[in-house]
Length: 462
Image 1 (cartoon, rainbow, N blue to C red):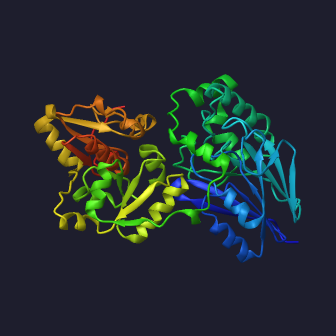
Image 2 (tube, helix red, strand yellow):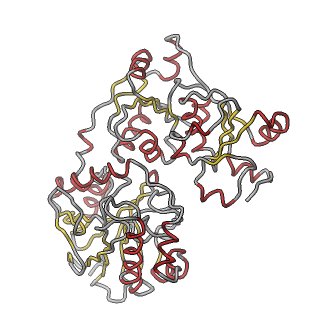
Image 3 (cartoon, rainbow, N blue to C red):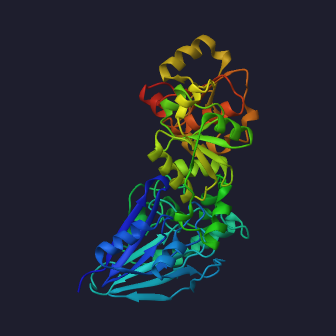
């Protein structure tokens, strides 16, 4: 008998992990991403038929491909009871099981991140000595636990209490050698201190996970809910989309190639240009009023957080391949109102006699020298999360996390030169474009961010 196989798929731009479990020709997919061909191709290459699709909860940070995958395979979708899903599915509860080949999957109801959250305990019946595996969704991560503020009907404190019981009465009763596979890794918005490790064990997390070290339920609740960053506004829309089931990606339209005059007119009508090129290219020359979100980072998440799911968008990318990739990544988080792309780039803008904009870049040493000469004329904006500032701050900096900047620009002095920084430069470039679009003219990006500041051994305060 062959052992049960587990294959992990990791989507770095969303820090999202999904899984395929296969045995004796049958397979189950856990927490599928929206573009499902990778599961179909992987199953086909192994000679497996996908018979089950399992969602650990109704996801808030990405659009799931469960509906398309079920339509293309005939597989049954399984969700925890109380999900509110309107598509055909099976509600599961504690003790329910799925068996195929040598694989047994047992469901554990683990409310807390959401009310319907479940974990899936896998046992390989071909090898009694193999440690069990548990797919923990957003209940337990490597190094963290799920955020408890995604229910409109429960307070974060109530969800945190439920999560404490789920962890201590369900997951932490499993043997220490039980392998855990979570649905997210470092960089996800669903937790704060997630590790980049792909897996761990119950025993390792029991010893090292800060949230599991809380001695009481009360301590745990405070740990999770005190100073909890607000959930992005688009999360609630994402949940509704996943409850109804997203349309197949094949339904996405082919993007129109737009001339510079057409883009200018669409901007006047409310469309926003999203520039996906590297930061230095954007800084040197870009369409005025455009928002910069480089394709190299957490592109789709930031686009959804800053622009929402319904704003009409125009993509300014490096080439048609990057434009297509940008459209796909946006669709993964439910941003589908992309009306076209700037066909000839900034060159076409120039050829039509239109002016471009730019954002000055300043090194940490240039900033130090400039501040010594003109301290009263300069302000520095730190767009890192509040928790990141515990590792040090540049003296006198103003703290506004990037996700809140769009609604807090009035706190900034438009008469000063505003130097913007984050940890490494990705978020600060986004921030400078938001500020420029809001009418700030004296804005510069601190290249390398706080990492460069520390590397230069420059002073910082706690």
